Amino acid sequence: MNSSTHIDQQLARRIKKSDVQAFDQLYERYSQRLYGFAFSMLKNKEDAKEVVQETFLKIWNKRTAIDSSRSLQAFLFSVSYNLIIDLFRNRAKDQDFLARLKAHFNEESLAADELVQLKELADEVHRLVNELPQKRRAIYLMSREEGLSHKEIAHQLGITEKTVENQITLSLKHIRARLNSGSLLSLLFLALFV
View 1 (cartoon, rainbow, N blue to C red):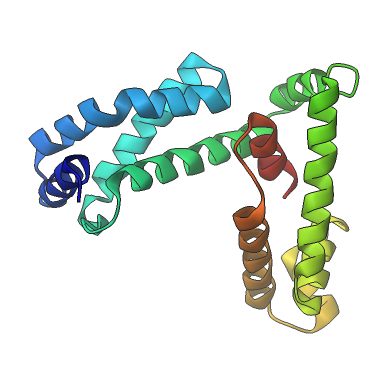
View 2: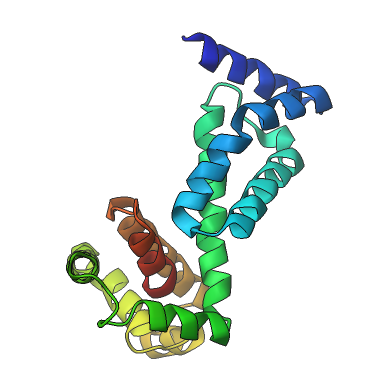
């Protein structure tokens, strides 16, 4: 075990016991790296700062659930990544944001390599959807392509809404786990279309 991992494990154990000094050390240790990560995805200083603040707030609020045997760094970046996805999803509901996004990502403004990447992403999602078991695939397509609610799908298929919800969750996990989401375009695609 390297010294960085050892320090993280000590900090995790102390934070779990509500040690504010350990939490401050964690912030000093990772805030700049998390900011760089968030900014690379969001391209907006204020949004990146907000993600960093929310990440540490979530860590503090869930401190008793921290597993000191697991990578604290991976946990921090995972929380940040999920907050970035949430930010994209929330912004997707904002009509002004959607209009700006569409203006930025229309076919004329996309560089050729971005268009190719977007088409490759769509093809990859289609391939991954086709890998799903038949029932799960049908439920996913009814939700995403036909725009049916969980209640409508449950009624049409004679199953419970909870089953529909579980099948869609499993579908999304399958797609997200296998889709390369390293770029901003991939993140947007995942947040808005998957």
